[in-house]
Length: 432
Image 1 (cartoon, one colour):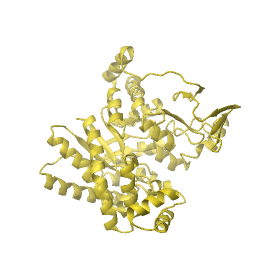
Image 2 (cartoon, helix red, strand yellow):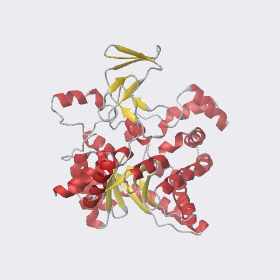
Image 3 (cartoon, helix red, strand yellow):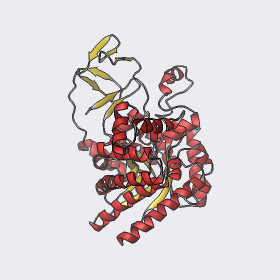
Image 4 (spheres, helix red, strand yellow):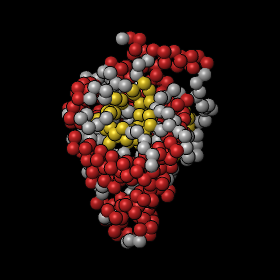
């Protein structure tokens, strides 16, 4: 319902900001001066008290927060702006894709000149009312049969979501990331939600509570997520493959031209990727035989763990493309939590320990070295290896220029950052 989001905690690549961008919403995160009183339903900022229902306006580019309602209008590509974008296309080598999880975002990005989707997150699709119940049923089931039963309910929802996105990006590549976040993010932690799930599944509330507690992890960002989920529960990968390629098959029969790419997240070891690829290829072969239609598709991986960059030559022996998830790669290289960095970042910037927030501007000396190494190692084994970046750095000018320099094929960023990325890509080509 919100037109914009203001948070007291987090930073530019915290989940609040990333999800807001995915929704096409303005978000200012990590405004530490805000004091929220949940009981009184008020917020206080530097002595100004605002109550629930009062208007504030946000400038997502500068981070300014205004009291009252400031009229706004949607951005559009026209006039001098359109001329500049056409000029960019004349010079650029680096392609610009978008991070989009809905047909609307895909259309917005295409309007800004994106030539494909570099990251389509599947987890955001599960939060609608009907989908979340089936998703929770799958997570809370205690055996394979229970999970498969719930996944069968999710399959048509996922397929419909992908169909809309592929249609919006007709003729362009769409890189779909398999389920990535820890499962505890989807389960109900409140009593009401647990009671609803107990009723839906025909089990006791106590059983649901125990299953929810068992999913709790001390460090979930380093826990049971990414390809680790797909390898422990291959039926999830199987369902998602059927949904992705099933949507593509239906569209091809309708005369569209879908270009699906399936991305395995959080690979750190070649064998993790191999295990997932086998599940994907098997599910694809079964689907194509049943439908009597075959769709060309690629299976690649996200490079977001330092070990994956260090062993990129081995991973490239199987993976058909690399996409650098620089949000997580930065988090794991620095050992900084994306969601908690705001507690010490201002001090680090003030003391010049850090020149810039590494989650906003790619750290070329450390994280960038891993990217460059992975590209070189990967292409030594697979010379035509396509490499892209899909972290939020894909829309930051100096980071885009670095991506051009190390030979990436594309950058991918949020829809409204596509024009900035296109400009930076053109400048990088001219400056060479």
